[in-house]
Image 1 (cartoon, rainbow, N blue to C red):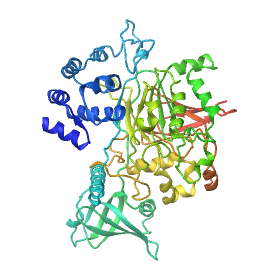
Image 2 (image 1 turned 45 degrees about the vertical axis):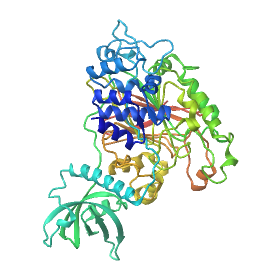
Image 3 (image 1 turned 60 degrees about the horizontal axis):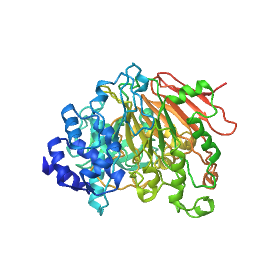
Length: 557
């Protein structure tokens, strides 16, 4: 066990002191060790993980301790000095009222005698928030990464019952029998007779496929095929040339609908762009006042009290040097000062609300995805906000977790890949997909990958795992970047595309994009009902009414 723990930390670029190594050996839980690495790395930016370092940050990592079994919890309590509550408390009092202290540290709780499920503190898990240590990258790293991506999506496709008689390309013979293959599309062309020819490969070999325009349904499907898509094909023919009888994508379907046991709400915002001359400061101030219950009627106050989570999906500041000539459009030209102003706003969000913040292209992290969480090098004021969790882009958060019951999984992705997808898919081009971001997100869920086109955006293969693959289907996916509010549902997954807090930029005007600023979706996690709040000067809120098939939004009368 000791060797495995050491290997895990070394691969991530961290060192352990002897006390922590002995602790992990006694705990015998590699998953917990991995979570400790990810959490402590974000909080402290230290490479040497010591007992003292964990003690100093025990309140920040406390949420991941609740999933340990009783014996392991007792070991944690014995080893770390700063845990002042029993880790068993949460399990024993899940359906009792638990009242926060007047000044509350994250997830600190004490029991009460009444039975009020509403008073249970916020419970969450950060399921995925990858952090990587700096390393030299070589061609073999990209090859390994692409193989990992292929194998992940191949596994998803193998679950599809339509793909019967699956074989690898090198096993295709010269007979004309029917079979299925899974491959990555490397080339797509159209013949003079308007048929489509694909070149496809798997780990064993390559082949060509013909899609005849006379097969109208299959031909329409094939129009959406992108280069680097990993797809299943039902075929007939020989290895040299195959005829396609059907096209199968991995697709996504939510089997079980997860809802909260209590009436609580989640709020979604993004693209704040603090520091820009076009930052809509008054509207954002209006939002901060609203979430504090200022100048609202009694009915709204009741809802505001039940807001437990805020998701902030990237581009929190405008940044510096993001694009040529940006300095002309900056009110604050120091990136650290931009984060200071942002922190000033976020500090005003009530402490009983748990916030999750992931970066975007304008934030002070690398542009290449997956983007790591913001760090103390530029965003130190954010790390001091006790109810704020800094996570990666993309990341997966599970909220409203109760013992023995799965929580609600939220996939956060800023959305840099959405622009090239709009340009490549005919359906999205024709409707100007920038105005319909939820339709773009449906294509990501359909392909089970957040950036399916290789080379369309910058990514770094830091791991043997592709964190842009949508392995587990989320209950909610929330995106940003297109500055447009859009709510929809796809096979059980709620799509929440976020607005912005910035007026139209010269670039958006040039490309014909019309942002829809200052809109805030608020989701009832118990019923699934959504309302879009409008914080523009003369804005009208929208009620979104959900049924089992779709979600529609109409102006509130």
